[in-house]
Length: 505
Image (cartoon, rainbow, N blue to C red):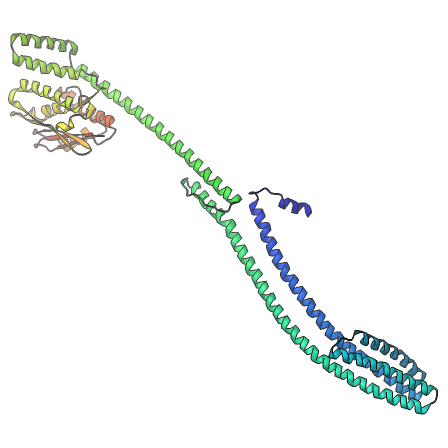
């Protein structure tokens, strides 16, 4: 037991706080219960002692009266019969009565009852002396003397009985007062005991409720947070446990663990997203390179020794300039610029302004070839022309507008190039008043199915420039990393408007 108590108190500051609190709670409860029990025992013992005293006093007086009566009976019996047995009984009980008289005189207090007890003791001694004298006179056959002594002893016997009755009455009154006092004390003690018992019971109940809440509340919070983490929600609220014991340490450790798990999961997600983005970017780069090589190859296939032709055109421009052939010079210069632009690297980006300048060279050549069959209108917002975009986007669209839109009309037609600042985008509109496009054909152009590419249709008709609409759309989607890069508005017989959407950011 000593070792266990020593072990309970063996803890460092700030540690084992719950054990310490438990020990203190049980110690306080035990102390309160013990105090109530000791108080009840002491008061009960005092009441029992006083009641026992009252009872003993009553028994003592009864015994005193019985011994006195027995002595008087044996005295009378001996005086009338001279029987030896009566004499023996007299001596026996007179001795007891003498001892009781001495005890009465010795223990008498300075009270009314004490003075009566002292008088009774003195009278008993006188009575025994007179009765003994009567006995001796009887044995000496002195009739007058034993009659006189007997009468005197009988008179004293009557006084003693009257005093005993008076003492009993006096003690009865004292006992009644004492009983009333004791009864009042008993009621007070019972009331105090009930209050103490209820107070201890209420204190214990409140202590149990508080301590149960104190222990279970942090555990419930930890349990709810653990369930949230089990569901995958690592962004839990901070658990506040202001107990400064093992529970607060457990809560803080749990929160740090949850934060660590959340950070670890976030890192894993970021790594996964980064890997996914890298793979997606790699795939886009592969597609872009494939499309660029395809466009470059088809462009080269559509030209016969383009570098030789480009150099030859430059020589022709110089000859025309020396001969003063201005129209021929302008034509060959625009054709040379067109070839120069088309021979540039496909993977290099250009500005919208450069694309428009290339269209102007292309339109100049078309007008020289087809005279008044084509009318070109340019409505360009100069604030939009610095935006970056892939090379050779507009020329294939303008070429399609001429070849498939107005080229088959006897009277030719009009092509409008328009740029519009649409807030977060720049819209490049290429509009013609040609024969229009069927909805099914529009769907095929915008479809992600490569088998529907317009390049196949153009190649079959022998009218393609080598770069189809599908290539243009795919390069725009890959470059800007979005699907909504082009819009086609057309109905058969009403012309076509192709809108290219170039994001500003």
